[in-house]
Image 1 (cartoon, helix red, strand yellow):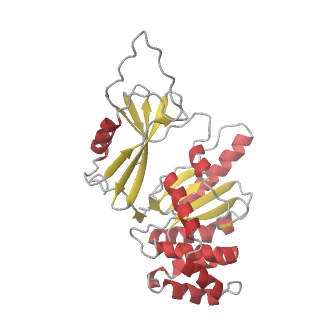
Image 2 (image 1 turned 120 degrees about the vertical axis):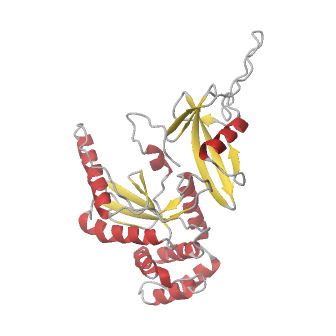
Length: 326
């Protein structure tokens, strides 16, 4: 649902201000716009073939990074599922753009980079690496298991000082019943030992098919007994009290602010990559990013990175129902 689309939208204009009246100054929080939110909702329902059961909330227009456009966020809700879309409208309300507006000469991934927070999250690789991969993962997602193995097997050996990998929790509770509890446990382990978190990360993906909602805690505590720098009693209390749930919720909120609706989703220096990417593709993108930075420093055109083609389908996503979604 995130391809760029430009459509004409004919809406009613605000009545002209009589000549004898002075126009009122525009409010900073509610810019002057001829946008009719009710008509926009109708238009969006038709555009995206949204079923009647889905609730839609259209926010008031707000300033965007482009002076001639206003940003309008649209929120979809269905049986506890949430999805957000960003539209841009002209100030006369006559045209609407769906997608991302890029500012030429500025990093095309700046908006994502502004939202991403890596401090306090599990990571491996050099802290000052020129390439950072932020993965939003779900411990119950099969394709996350494959993507995690790809990163763990290849990044440390091929880019030990050039790539840093950061893990962020995005458990899809609607379809994965024990994923959030696993994220909470993982954060408990991380607080005791950052190194032990990665042992847990690898272990839980390896034993993914053996874990259920009922046996998760027992399995995790049994795992902890085999790790020297973990205190099983402290871990059990942390799991029981859900002491790290706030951190997991913050990671989920960050993912939603970035419009993440599928796992795995990774951001490679801000570039969004959705689904399970084979190492061949990731290697090309990483190499292209390193070449781009090198050429940028030399103030010369970047070498072509090679298009990443043939990515696998993403396995786990939560989308608002529409017949357009296969």
